[in-house]
Image (cartoon, rainbow, N blue to C red):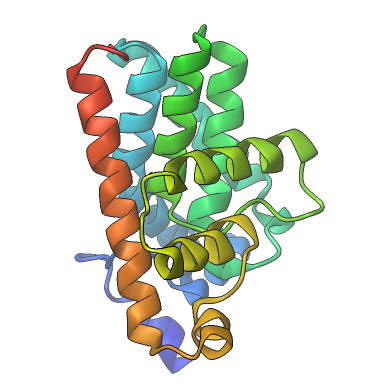
Length: 204
């Protein structure tokens, strides 16, 4: 209970990532916990929707509200509270795919953006096979630019196979910090790739 109170009392300055305690509180329909989650993730979800909506802010805001409404309604279906970010952006991706008209290249870029913003493991086996396959293909394509074989194995293990960072470190016999830094740098490279694609006009 003390940990939960501490997490909820940090409303003024939410940290990167999300506390499982806050997610559990939101599942109990704690409005303050839900406001924390909304406040932390709304800017990123809206940014994602803006890309998918070709810069139409009114449409992006409508989609954002729809996505959070769907998340709230289905929060009990989230099996791993620590995976809230990836779960939320999986909902965002599916919603935008249903409503946005995207070319194949735009779809791949928006998939990459969802991966970066969610910064989580792939969809679980019980989720839609098409979503999981799309996720894995996005990661594999992004891994083409990872020259170091060891770093590439870390990225694939975490993002394609869903291995925990400490399990990866133990299996590869490397420090846990090396694994987390490798994943952080990979996400930064993905962000840079996305920014370059946007600058080239591949997405509005």
